[in-house]
Amino acid sequence: MDVKNLQTKAQKIYDKCKDVINEEELLQEVERLKHHALAIDSTMKTAPPATLLKLTYKHQEGYPNLTTVLKEYLTPPVMVSSGERSISK
Image (cartoon, rainbow, N blue to C red; front, top):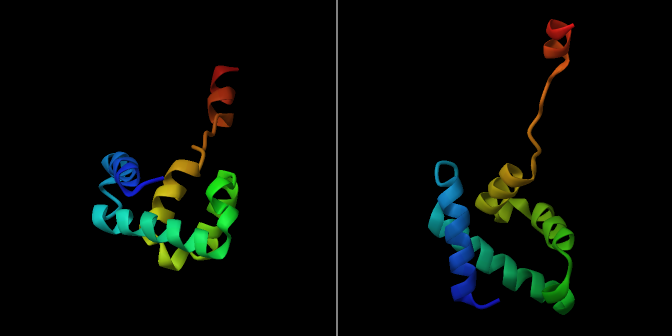
């Protein structure tokens, strides 16, 4: 993926999470992760997303904004409906 494409995707993510992340730092982290992943393993270019996610979390201190975005997007919402069920009985 070229830098322009990365910038476009990072901008879309930033637009959704701008209250919790820094735009310029996010873009730098995405670009840094790209180089880091390829330096570790040249096949990372075609690796499944889960592999890249594991790499990101393994080195999360180097990617604080990216880690925050991933936590926001990958954490499922919690629903507690047991109270609602007891009311409707």
